[in-house]
Length: 77
Length: 336
Image (cartoon, rainbow over all chains, first blue to last red; front, side, top):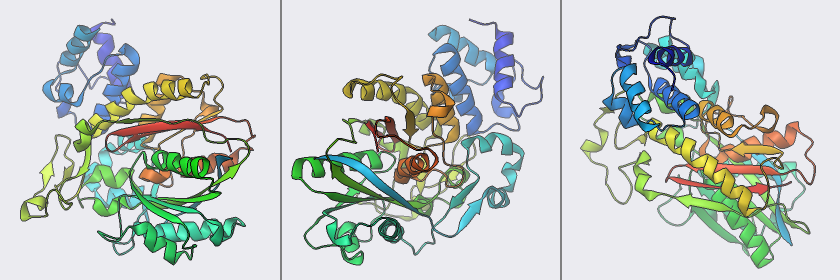
């Protein structure tokens, strides 16, 4: 599994509307100004293609930071 | 004799709803424009409230008669696939039989199905031809889903459009429609639903109470509701398995497929599936930019596009796969 820092960077790249450096491991992604259901789909797709791990809408609802998502994915690998 | 898809005609309502119109209606979403437009739609056609799914189908069928030399009296079966019907009873297909001046010696059947509607209906058309020796089935697949949207439901206004398609399925010596695979999971029937106003739940004042989801999208029980992340995940998990099952059932290999035409749900999902399944660009059809997701009409529209842009050979194999409301899924392999 890639490092948390790499994971944050990759998510930031996938959410291509974000200015580089906007996202950090501890930030609540729902607080992002451009947060939308499309962002949720982009994260779900990235995690599925990259790690073959299923992230659900409920997971996104229950987590708040990118670090939380990282931990969930790690536990499902 | 075997069934094959002989001709497809499309009809769209005149009124258009562009992305410019969308951001005028939802100016607060302008900041998220680039991300939202990953759904891959620039324009959609939208019906007026007093125009029905059967009206659109009537025009599509007339277009098909203009574009082909088939005599109306040679249609043996009429199938009408939609989720909007003219009356509680009788069926809308009987209204269309008369309106289209088709023979009275035909079967006319309504099929209530959405995203998988074309696949469900095509299997019935094939059965009618191959089991009953009929020569010509006229299949009408239409959607007027925009009528069911809440005024504030930005997601749906962005993604969907209205359309009707008329498909002529005829008989010939060699088969053009393969074996079908289907799936149904009513346990997730609430993923895409209009909850109130049908037989189960009457419309009450409560039906119109607005509900906002965690992404700020608004709808109510009297209007269309879609669980976006749930449906996306369903597509991502179900379609790869479905493709394998279609290939196995038809004794075909992945490499033998010349073109893949999926239900045009949204471009981002289609591109994710394409990556996951490693389908080369030249074999993968994405065709929804000017129409949006037209539910049961997306596969006929995309297939017609393919038939127009490529000189298809008799032995070309086209894999069709649909998935959505129900939840339901299904597919087959066709040649034209």
